[in-house]
Length: 458
Image 1 (cartoon, rainbow, N blue to C red):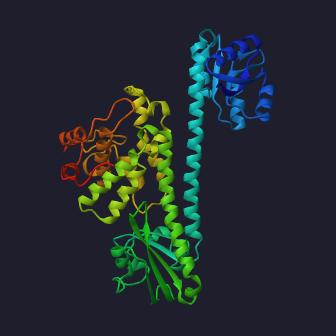
Image 2: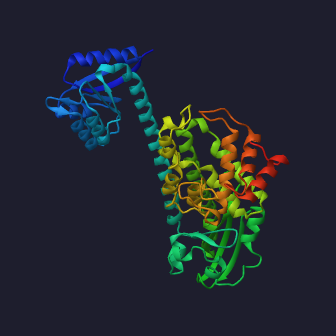
Image 3: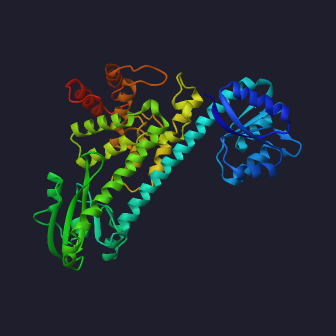
């Protein structure tokens, strides 16, 4: 069955239009077409209905492709725009592409038209899905910010070393500080005005068993009798990211206990929602590596745990692993799914994705350096990695772990341009590059996990 194609043509020759329509029908399309020759006609057609694609001649008696592109930009539209001309030269084609045209086809070589149309329609759909995913990320971030700072209770997120990683506006105002001044300080020095934790320490108890704790005390720094509800803040799955401390005047306790729990749950869901939306962005763009980020996160988490690093680092590595390839949303889909070896130019586009991921994440205030981990996951300890060429101790320990997990999963798994090499080949590669490209301790731990059957990819 032919695919309906809403086609707008900027063309002064009806005969040429009929030839193009015939070519499209041969290629499996059922074009519903309107032809215009002037700026006024194009503007009216764009306002009248939506279109799937625009085919435009290079130069008409009263109009041109450059003028058409300018008008489309002014309308704020993202439509595939293909020049179909019999006279356009290479210099004019380059100028048109810079102005926003997606491709051009010579009228003497219309056999290229159907493949080009198909590709650009697919790219347009990809752009639409990416925009939707980006809007979901922004919505989740805004919900997190709005919920956190709109709560009238005094709230702090505390990590596993009793450091403040985030406070809401109400708590900062109560202490006559800015949230930035409180980040990184010991919670018991700054909030409680004590040099050592309250005994028994609700924070430590929550970390040990993951259960919510409630206590009451007189707090001189906060100025009165307060209740403290300490709740585990969880990321994806069962991973605990820290503890939410919610302070409230004791007189309001009975009426507000339900709201405390509800607000804590909203904060947890908002953070998990940001990460999940980001992971879904890459999955939608690059289906050939579906599950890659999750598997890398699983292995990176296992390595971090086996190395005996802190629970906070384990959770941070897990979160970064789930979205480490977020920057691939900027890479054209045909490159990600190319079934043959990439050219040097194509690979240079791929290499931009850690930087793109960092730019997306750097303004989000996670409890861990997620943006930096994503930025550095292709760095190598001898300085041969990208995009920054970092070496040795310049690379975060968590990024060194992600680098090994990423390489092992990539080699062991199928890719569009090659079959899976298998886990043994992957392990041989990291063993060969131990101390050269990859951190020796991370490599040894990774090898031990597989050889002692403590880990396997699902």
